Length: 415
Ligand code: COA
Image 1 (cartoon, rainbow, N blue to C red):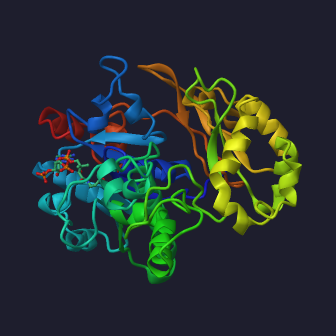
Image 2: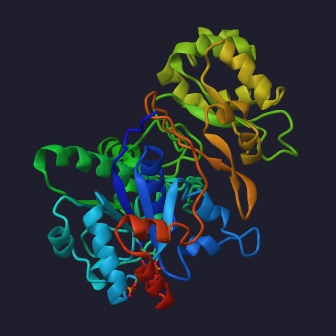
């Protein structure tokens, strides 16, 4: 079956996580992704957080499926010449080097346009134009600068970063959308364009509701769905809201049976207005359906702590899965706190292709996260990540280089 991005060729000049997430998605949609890596070393993540000595790490393998790898010294004049040929041949160049690295290599936007006016040049940088534009940035820096850390955690504790890689993978997703949009526009404009996804901006986009809350706070001095209401004071900036819901329906993480020994025996429970009578019946507090202290959402906001304490008495008598089954019968929105172990074993995620087992020639079988985006006419088959330089000769031959020249490049360590 054909794929959505069949015929699109990507010069993948990315490393670490943010850029590789983006190009992996494009590969899953059918693009031919050629990952250009430094001769000898490759993407630094190949060697980071290794679990098997001498074998590409899971960090690398899980971010670089369905790609081809070539090694090329792009600072060597002959390597530059090969890169120029690739630029002429590809539709998109994706990079996430430190600011200015591509220019220093001699591949400015102007130069790339001279070589291929249709090329789309897509970049991840830590910050957009401004006082921090020259800074190098990793995941947690972006989480902090984008507003996630100041709004995550508990009010009486320090700012917290989240385990979800919203700075790296989140930015990669944003960049992928920019790239496919630029490819679409190219049909009418006939030209390429620059696509920039700064990590700070991408994190802020994901923290949109907190900027909403900043303005609500400035206007009204309070926010009733926050745990600070009604007992504590609000300051000038959006506070950390613990596990309170970010929307209009109050929610909380509650203990379930076994919480004393299992760190993940918890459930997220949402007291959606529409199912309040059902919540009361399930926990055995029918009186709360009509009691005016609890009957309306506005009244309940004054009593969220005792309400959730009472619901927790009920959830603590059930495992998180028993609670899920019962609550779902009543359409009460809730979710078990799943550990990574439980997710890895989840049958539905495996059947949908979101958890996939892959065989790798050096490491053997491992689990990965497949394409979370499902398309009816563009199915994803996840294939293993390439070994360093596995496709150098194949790609160079496709570009028109002869065997002897390729051998000479290898001799000179250009590839
Ligand atoms: N051949 C020769 N040189 C190469 C090469 C190749 N194939 N590929 C990369 N290089 C060079 C670059 O040109 C650069 O050289 P320069 O410093 O002389 O200009 C050098 O390798 C290192 O690149 P750099 O991007 O600075 O790597 P780093 O390890 O020092 O920094 C980051 C890593 C992630 C901090 C930095 O790349 C960055 O801030 N990127 C943008 C934000 C980002 O994506 N961060 C998230 C990463 S998950």
